[in-house]
Image (cartoon, rainbow, N blue to C red; front, side, top):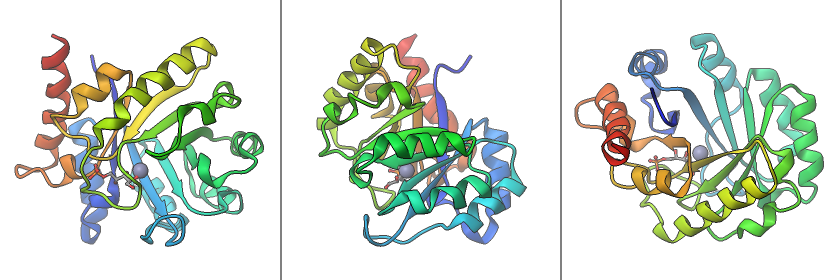
Length: 224
Ligand code: DX5
Ligand code: ZN
């Protein structure tokens, strides 16, 4: 049995053959497809609009986990919900009315996630943790795949886990950025159970399935 959920970020997919890449993810046993939406303002990169989400929806039945790295996400939330997102996660730094934003996401029938940048303290979650389905602790500064894991974020994952437990929140803890065979056991030990990965899956020298297997095995070896 898998002890964590693997969310493959298509940011590193080969978009010349997106459908084939997603089918390979399905066959490798990935649990969710992670979609990184970047607006060129909140982060210095511009990526995927709702059209990509609706295209993915036609390709796969896997849940679409949409990570909004955009300024003013409230105006875009309905676009991505309509396109077929299963979960919408917003960066807490972009949401002056985070409580209302989470309500909006739920009212559109999606799960709601809250994301913390590496420089944002866990305490920003205190008043909303019981309204979130997922807390994403960024383990790189958002914007690009292929960056190095920031080990100084590890204590914050454990703090978020304590906050979730003490608030009797249903929220699960996700991590995103620089996750590979070496760093996955570390975030797992700190309490993360939803694992986002792009490079370690798509750029594995032996292909997607080998990348997924290597990630799975890194935890199995560690908890055995
Ligand atoms: C970074 C994105 C990540 C990214 C992860 O801003 O939010 O989802 O795709 O890429 P890797 O796994 O290569 O760090
Ligand atoms: Zn992401």
